[in-house]
Length: 339
Ligand code: KG4
Ligand code: ZN
Image 1: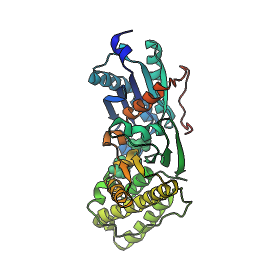
Image 2 (image 1 turned 180 degrees about the vertical axis):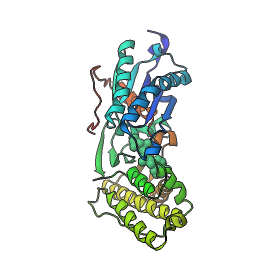
Image 3 (image 1 turned 120 degrees about the vertical axis):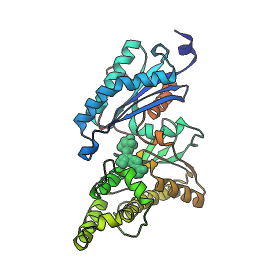
Image 4 (image 1 turned 45 degrees about the vertical axis):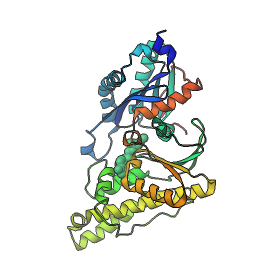
């Protein structure tokens, strides 16, 4: 065994659950590289086309892995383990990452570590310092998930509440699509909302205290736009930033109301946000303001760790490695992997 390999835990991690091909090298729990290749070809279709996503992963995975190793200045022979996203996600996309990871681990004769994509979003905070203190609450908001998670340790977390239908990111994307914004619309809605005022009211679903529901928002926005456009066909053009600010406020109020409730119920005052939607500037400000008011300690990941990325997979794998929690080489991808 070479000296680097004997002295350090060095993990190559691969993420390919949706439309980002990413690879990262983690040494002793620290990020040495985090390469993310985003597929832009989906924008013209207004959403991710699964068949196209898996083809794109096939094209990008090898150069992305090579770049991650080069940037980290790590040779394959120094690797202690290979980690990968097992699920949840698009099956065809996951399979590309899983098979690549399996082949590499087999050829290097090193352990393989399977990672749950949503556990990894929660642990993305451990890619940076300071680390959140346990137990903490994570509001995990992405294009596919909206969850409030009680995080007891690196390996023990429980879902307190989640969405009954659409995810928060989907609510942003679908609202933006109705306004003619490109996919994914979340960042565009965010940018426009900063220039507008939340002067319009959209309905909020009445659900259980820990539950979310966003599917009613798109209907509410749709009827509102139909009515306004009938009176003035230029309404969207004139009012775009105010509509974005109003829709964003509705989504953020729903998210933060439940997070406040969860903190009151559990007594936990260490609070974090994770997932692609945690890049939202309004959500970041909202969390800071509520934290000041409630005496919370809050954690917001750097943008590269909010979105889908392999560093969060590698960080999660590092804690699994410490527990020698490896998987068999005949493991398969799981589109609906249980939490
Ligand atoms: O975590 P992520 O990169 O992928 C999934 O696992 O889904 O999240 C992507 C989602 C998309 O719905 C995108 O529109 C949303 O995150 N998003 C945002 C912002 N940046 C990304 N939503 C609101 N504001 C943003 N700044
Ligand atoms: Zn994600």
